Length: 173
Image (cartoon, rainbow, N blue to C red):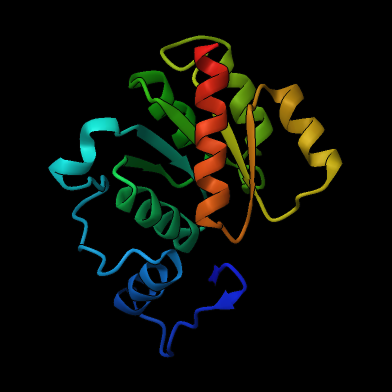
């Protein structure tokens, strides 16, 4: 986990509690509250500008890190463990933003985004790509698939915040 130029280590053996503490230190956010169930929510004082975000990511650790960071920023998160589940969730519930992993085993994020764009409550919802490959070719493919933002992994809090702001400004324009 990176915070600026510093590295924050997760002590071994790797546990959920240690991961949450490391994410909290990396983000400079203090103590992380224990979320319950499949949805994480922030405290009432942070909810005024809260977004409802769907995180579509096949890696459980990446889902957890993204959810913890977004929750600490005041947003609520729902999770999908693969593209098909993401499409299903997006067809049943309106989200403010969707974070979409590009490389998943059953279907890639490009195809999932294309299917979400075909109709339903999230046909126009901003989608931000999550990927370990941050090259120009991936960026162009994201745009072709209808994604409005791009965040490289490991997720950096500042980059994620900027991407959220950028796609929301584009959506409102």
